[in-house]
Image (cartoon, rainbow, N blue to C red; front, side):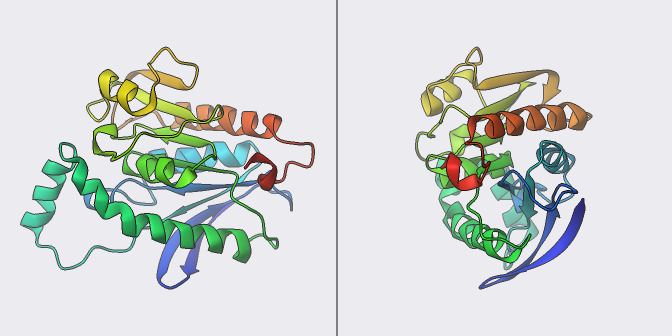
Amino acid sequence: MMERVRIRTTFETEGILAYPDANASRGRILVNCPHPLLGGTLDNPVVMAILDGCVRAGFAALAWEYRTRTGLSQEEVDAMRTRFWEDHRLIESSAGDLADAQEIAGWFRKETLGCDEEITAYAGYSYGAIVSLLLADESPVFAISPPLRAMPQSARVVPQTRIILAEEDFAVSDEELVASTGLTRESDNVLTLDGSDHLFVGDAPRIADVAQEWALRLHSASSSDCHASSLL
């Protein structure tokens, strides 16, 4: 099941809530989208594939829209798009997005599906993967093509974290992967999708399958009651 929802915290935004047909889920996964000034939207095929895979594994998942950026001219937006991949200081503007994501997580815990349950894990694509890695602390992350050169600190990678890279991924070099996470493409936590690039055009089915596999492993690693809090 997938439905569009209005999310009201200290601000209002839109989300897509996906959940199994059964009344109870195995946990909750918060999905963060690509950067809103870099074409990131709820309808991004990679975001939808993550939601699909999580639901197929029995988890509830929520993707949400960042607050609309206002007051920028088209020239300023274009300049930011060009510089974003090269200047890690630009990611510092994510502090507002991180705070917003924490509010969204609180809404997800308390206002949906009839119970108050901690977030099991985080997932995200591109900038959303960076937001997830910064939010997660000791929680697992499903990070698709995180632009690690834009990350101001080393990522914490717990055993259940999975990093998905494209074969030709301009956003993540092998050197940046090692420097930021201590992992290589040969690590068990890292999967490279052959024949893909950072946009993952046509790769939604593969991504959904990999997300499902990852989420099922989260479930198998949890205690028998499968509550999200047992994974934190």
